[in-house]
Image (tube, rainbow, N blue to C red; front, side, top):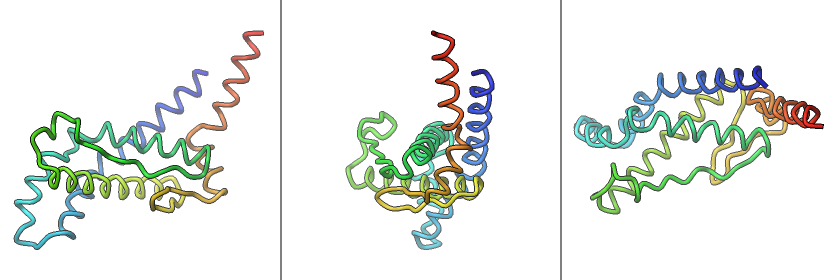
Length: 161
């Protein structure tokens, strides 16, 4: 059990490092692609107030870990739905601004998930549902520890008898 927990912590640390190392660059690259060069500094400042590593690294890591777990177990999972309406950090924003920020964050998440997948050596098909091939599902099951989890459960249940 201890070995399993340690491997999960190491995996989470690895994902966190990837997200931390790439979050701002990915966000800024998306903004550069989406706006005129002369508008970029003002848009980056405004979006950066709401979608920053300080506010979103933990959430992004959690979403990525959950997504990878689902892909490892099932081979597919719905794309996450980001809803900031009840988040106090977004209070007072009009619906258009809120929708734009949710869309931007969704795109940041997709790109970060793609970077993580590449780092792990798997290919994730992006769309309404996220999918992996059976070969990549098995690879993720090994990496994420889904295979080890069943062994841990069996060992615990044997001790309980």
